[in-house]
Length: 258
Image (cartoon, rainbow, N blue to C red; front, side, top):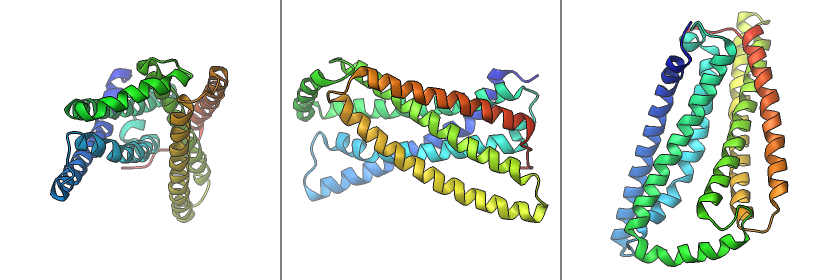
């Protein structure tokens, strides 16, 4: 039997490389926009921080798509599926490597924001004081760390729900295509890819809306109980979809050659 840790490490490799590529692209974009600000004559100590904040949304959105693609490739290709390990552990290793990769992206973004924030602290310090004032109305208290952890928890739950939903749609269509002739399988697979692309962009749009709503509500007067009811409902859906995905992997979904 393949060790869970070995499979997790192997699955994480390609996902971490994708995160590194995204960060390099973001750094290039920050450098170009900062140089342009310098050319226009409006460069300040906080320009780097503003550039990082402005470009950071792109890695969040693109990482969701890339990690979703890596997830689905692992389910249907024999690179990992042929490893001698139970389907439940296989699914856990795959989704856990995805979550860890996304957390890695968050850590890199946080480091980048802290470094550029310290560079421009003389300009940004009044904004921090205003943020402390607004936190008086936050549902997670006045501690910035608590607010960040609350936002991180809800963001992860939303992302997990989105990934499990995408996997469920993909695995159902893959299982259904196994009963079709090979020629029709190509047609069905083409339709599946179109559906997956549309679904992915719809989910990304939903996520962006939810993150914006979360950011606004955390600074407002929403009650904590309503928040956690929503989180529990999403977690329940994730559990149900996870069970369905593992069942489909075990009974219906076959691998294809790389």
